[in-house]
Structure formats: C-alpha cells, structure tokens
Length: 431
Image 1 (cartoon, rainbow, N blue to C red):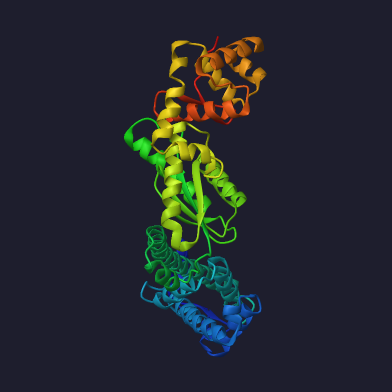
Image 2 (cartoon, rainbow, N blue to C red):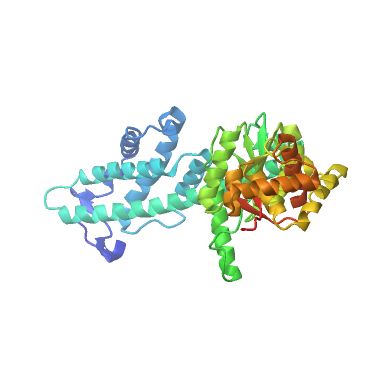
C-alpha cells in the first residue's frame, strides 16, 4: 500500500506512490512494449478509421499510445498530472490529425478506449483489501484522461480553425480571381485542391435588413453580423453537386454555384433566406469560367434593375426579364416609350388603371378588385386610354407596348413601384 500522501485531483487525498499487489501501481504500465501493444490492440479493435488500421496508421497509434501509457505511469507514481510541456507530443499529433481531416469525435473515442484498456491493466494487479488504493488509481487515471482530452481538443480545434481560415482565404482569392478573369484562379485552385467547374451560375445577392437590425449602431451591427453568419453557414453547408464559392458582406455579395441548374440556385437562395431570416433578392447568370466577369456584370446590372423596378425577392434571370433588361438601356426607343404615357397623367384614374390591368396580366376582374371598382369601370377607362394614346390595351400588341412604357416610366423614376401578388406593381390609387 501507499505510504506518502498528497492532495490530488479536485482536492482528493491521494498517495504519491500507489501500490497494488505489492508493487507500484505503474508496474503493469512500465512493462513496455507489452502494455502499449495491449492498448493499441484494444483501440484498433474498436475503430473503423482506415487512417489508423492500416500499417502506417497503426504505427502512429502505437506512438501516441506509448506516450499516454508513459504519462499514466508517471501520474500513478507521482500523484500529479502532467505539465504543458509533457503534453506537447499529444498536441502535435492532434494538430496533425486536424490537418488530415480526421474528425475529432473518433479521436476522443480512441482516447477513452485506450484509457479504458490501461485502467484494466492497472486494476488487474490489485488484490483483496486494496479497494481504496484502486479507487485512488482510478481517480488519477480519470484526471489524466480529462487533462489529455482537453489538450488534444484544444490543439485540434486551434489547428482546424487555422487550416479553415487559410483555406477560406485561398478560396476567397480564387473566387475574386475568377470574377476578375484572372488566370491565377487556376493556379490557386490547384494549390488548394479545388477542381474548377465547367460552368458557374453567377448569383448577385442583396440582403435586406433583418427586423432585429434596429436600435443603437452597436445593436444593429450585432444583428447584421448574426444574420451574415447564419447566411454563411447556409452557403457552407450547401453541396449540389459541389460547394458554392461566396464573397459576402452584411448587405449582399456574389456567389458562384458550380455546375448548377436553376432549381439548385433557387434552393440555395431559399436556404439562405431561411437561415438569415430575410427575403433575399438574387440575380443569376450562367457562364464558363473564362466568361465569368461578363456574367457577373450582367447579374449586377440585373440586380440593379430588379431593385429599381421594386420587383419581388427571389431569383431573377435575364431570360425572365429580357424586356425590362432591354428597356433599361438608354436610347431613342426608351425615350419614345416614356412619352407614350404623358397624356394619361392629366387624368388621375387612367394611369393607375393601366398599371393594375397590366400587372394583373390583363385580368379585368383582378384589376377591378385592386382598384376597388366595378369591372365595367375598368372597361370604360381602358377605352379612354385607347382614345387618348391611340393604343388599344385590350389587344396583345397594344398591351405589350403599354407594358414596355410602364417599365420605362418606372426606370425614369416618375413611378413609385410597390409589390403586389409577388411581383413589383406600380402604386395604385384606391377608388
């Protein structure tokens, strides 16, 4: 039995030198390599990690097991836990596992299995009447497991964050290079082990303020930062079929979605909206890597157009807004369209009626409901519009012309758009 006493883990009085079966409790652990081999066999029998079960991996496990066995023997002899210097080898191993991409959970599981095997070796030498010493030894072993687990976890997470930050910086540089048409993008991709896609959807995004972005500047910053972190998390966890590349700020940014179709992009934006708690505006354009700068410019221009017209949140594409996209370009045609509506400004009811009729897709009853008038009133006003402008809104050709004129009018800043039925609608005066 032990003779010298000291204060151990959590104030427990523990012998400096524990003895079991007439020998130091560390005796069964000092018989290396037998003890180490027993611990290694026990660990490998309870893991399916190929990094450890293959020949090279087994040697690495044996190296760490030998270190833990030595630490355990020292703790049993001295009654004190190892110093930071003593744990250096374990921290270096943990950092290596983080760089190799081995998850932390199986590492912790292996440590517990190894300590379980070591504790059985120690307990196997006890004889009747040594329960107290056996408990003291177990307390020391559990204390060591706590110290070792903390050291391994801390080193692993530090290295993981370092690697993740470096990879993020490299991915950010690659994304920036792709959007700028810089040939260095290919070299960066090769360096970080990323295979560039054959095509990308360039998605310009705008994040409206979250309802919590109120109060003092610090409170707004806190809420905006929380929104952005959640959106970043949604992008990072989205794989379809490969991770998206993103450069985001609190108000928006650009995302490159590799080899994606429209459904995938819609789903990504929906996930981001749910995560951030806001209705996100997005404009998308597809291109091969060499044409990404042009696609990005088109996406940014389309986003500006969507915002100027007050269109609904969600994903917008040039194919869906070809008319608006073309009208947005200055020129003689746009000026002509803007003048078409000038005569209607003199009659207070006609322009709101035309707007309601156009944006309800020529549905008289819906337009009347929006205007809170009888459908016959809508018919009368549409006839007046034809008389004044010379364009019949009841004919498809006339409706297209008047719709284009309304778009040009909105772009000119004279109309104040609102959102109705999911799409931007000019403000309608209720009758």
